[in-house]
Length: 127
Image 1: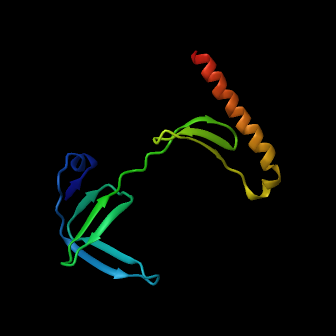
Image 2: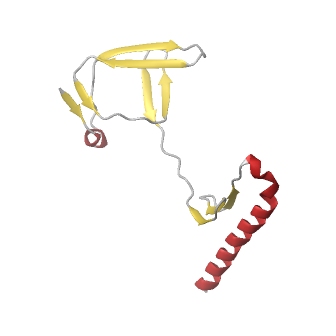
Image 3: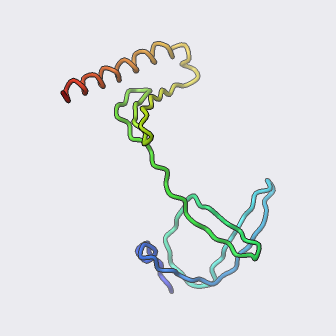
């Protein structure tokens, strides 16, 4: 039994497996690809987002996409946060349910003011 570990893959070792591949289209007109390994293998399960290239000669190349870097919030309130993007811009995000729309102006003013006070106190503290 071949045992494939994450460390093997991290060391850029290529593992060649024999099996059957089925290509098709589902009822919603989306392409499907299934690979069934014919060898006795023990490997870790994984899920990810991938770029898949199907070539005219039948070859298929699959490459995992890099994870999207997320902005870390500088300040947080109950329904909002302020973060600084990699593009040099600040982002204020307010999230509110539909059934609380009548409270939106008050919540927006309160949370934006609270974050503004936190920024001002941080700037004064740094001087």
